[in-house]
Each structure stands twice: as C-alpha cells, then as structure tokens.
Image (cartoon, rainbow, N blue to C red):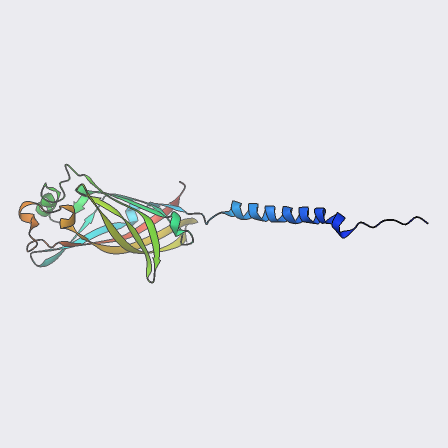
Length: 208
C-alpha cells in the first residue's frame, strides 16, 4: 500500500507567514486610513456673538464693543495640534455709547483706523488647561504684532439638527505695547494701559 507523504511544518510555513503578513498589512492600512481625529470648522454667527472691551478713564470704568468682526475656528478636543483660530476686527466699529469718545478712539492718536482699519489675531497653538483651553497666537494692532494668550472655554450643542459651538473667554491687552496712545494719550493717568477684552461667540459648524 502506497504511503502518502504529509506536508511538513516547514513546507506549510510560507503560507502561514504570508497570511500573517497580509493581516498585519491590512491592519496598518486601516489604522492609517482612520488617521487623526477630524477637526470641525466653525464660522461666526454674528447676530448671537459679542466682542467687548473695558478700560479705565479718569478713574472710572468704561465699556465698549466691536460691532463688526469675523471668526474662523478649526477645533477638536481630540486633535488640538490641528486647531487654528483667526479673528479679524473692524476697528472703526468700536462703540462705547459716546460719539465724541468713539471719534477720539478712531483718531490718529489711538486706533488710527484710517491707516490701520483692522486688527488681526491668529493662533495655531491650542492647549488644554485645568479650566478649559488656551490659544497662544499673535495679535496685530495698529501695525504692531505681539504674542497674546487667550484663555477660553468651548462646548458644542445640536440646535435644530445643526452642530454649533459656544466659545467664551477674556484676556488683557496693554494698549501702549501696540502704540495705541500717542501724544497726550501716552499718559496712563487719564487712560489706563490695561484693556480687558471679553467675548461670547456662537459658532456654526461649516464645511472648509
């Protein structure tokens, strides 16, 4: 009776190895395809957002707001490295409720809006903090660019079937660091150097 040779372990090994390699390759491809967490893009809802500032004038606290500004925000808590915040403010839209004071703010000694109509803030470094997040970026105001840190909180919600984000925070800017205050306005006894900036934004998720 003829004996049938059984395949040896070494004969079958290439098949096993190839199968294992195939599984590994497909696992790697799947992981690569998933990639990092997607980063939603948000655009400003101007009607439901505010950008305000407060300052000390002659020992009294005063408030103002900017009525025209734009915000573009790429943000995901799972992928902070890919985040980006861009803000553009129309400086002529400053409104303190006093026409004479607003005209002075827009004049050449302070905002100089005829020469510098916009302020820009761009941040590409977003980090987690114990109370929320922090943006580290560059503010360009009156032609001067400096680093500014902006702490903020962010939450998402679904409203009428659409994804929205709510972002709020505040920081302090020293006006003289940006040349906002020429002539008599360089003195800080009548107009304080520290200007508080606060914001409460409603952002709509949008396609890039």
